[in-house]
Length: 379
Image (cartoon, rainbow, N blue to C red; front, side, top):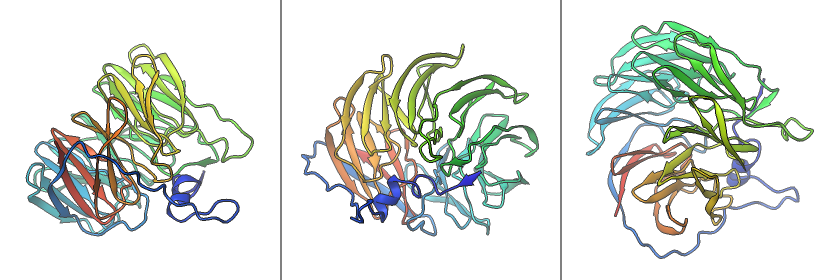
């Protein structure tokens, strides 16, 4: 598999950060429009987690374990902070480069290395429970239930490990296209099944006991003549909202699926390599053109679109109170009304925003590329 840096090396992010158009003109992020702030954003706490990320694309999403948030830097420093106060609870230096975000539950935190090791830490103390090699790079966040952790590797393989011992329980391999976007979606792991998007445009459900395929759907169909034109990756993390599965696709569709009978409820043409957010019977999507869309979860009708963030390399959306939040490559957070997509607030952080944000309760947690983890509230 020919493996490029995510979309950075292929189009949008490259142009936004330092790219040029075909005639040599530099493409800049769109100018910020003036807004009337209807809400007030407050920094609750902020912590320096270790090394910064520079201009690198990364998927180092923090994980939540009971009353703490656990985060890693790229050099192997893993730290735990109290969700409400930001007080450091523990920190360990694994002395190896970390490639994935932190998957966590109340007991365990999982990270992966560029050399193909998966490391399980105690969520309460940071002590290493086990370390195993999976034979390849993992960049997406591990997903857990009470018995296993599931990891999706850069080469498309999906591996399930026993949560207590690290023993491999099963592995799934798929046929990969010659060219894919770098990175993967993180699968959804339920009690009995794992739901995952693939770089070949398919979305699958795997049995958690055996790893056998329960069902599959092709949500994206390759179009065009060149390998780049025919990219069909399902790299954005799907969501399960009100018992319906919503799957984003690059150069393809947003697809709604009944996960219990594998019936496709609707498809709507949207292209995204980011994940989704949902609230108030709406799905929120950041397109690969840096447009934020509000979409009816039931009918797929577009409720609104916000197209004033072009070339700003916006993040996966998050929902906080009645707002949709996206970050951008210049370090701004944009708060939009869930009702109509209008800007209601803006907040400037000190570094670029690339990875996914987290919401827990009434706080938004943001990891910026300058190596700071910040908790914010809005009123």
